[in-house]
Image (cartoon, rainbow, N blue to C red; front, side, top):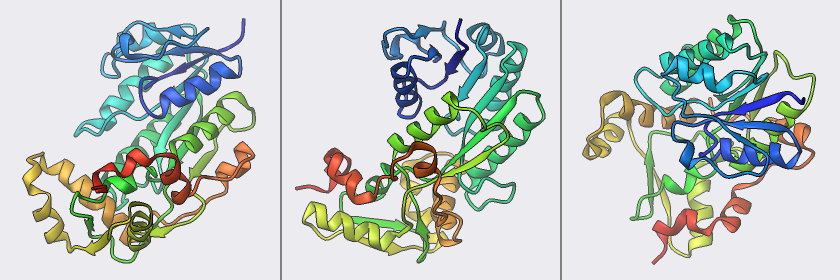
Length: 288
């Protein structure tokens, strides 16, 4: 019997793409999610019972008999690290032999981007649990760049003149599949980025080109950034995450350009222009 690869978040943008690639390669795949009814129906893939990261026993049952866990990071939350460690503990209890974890570029205990700190603590926890591990430190998603622009055609944030090497979901999935199906990745940490680092002014210029309207970037101060996001009415930690993501760009922490995509997949990483050409719906809010 071939080793089973358990894929979490299989109803999402990363996990779903990874699951499809694994099934297409003929791997034995088990799909996990909080709501099994939302998981994709893939020929040959096993659907696990409902499993929430916070429910250690449900996770253990869902992972029983699997050898590898593809662990997509949980949605942002105040207790996100605790949510992750619960899932990791369940994997260890189920006898998982390898964990491939979707982390974030620049993960560090003192990262400017507060959510990247959560990823670092999760990585450290995984390191101490026993199974082999590989960390995929993804940059910002290319899909997030058009969403930074408001309906008024303005990107606002305290990113200064910093740059970000955003990456496509498709490229992340290709890298993950290569790691999950291949050998020689135990203990490795891969920065998974796009092929070039863009300033937000360059992002705005590219959006202007494809939409035919003027899109601009306005560099905010920290105080202005908090004030312009106050109307969303979310908790302070979430606003801090939003603001600090721009500040991480300003600090140069998102400018890394790696060769992980071409080296591990055999194809070049998608550019922002290519992404926009393939995904016109991504900038729909900017069209008349």
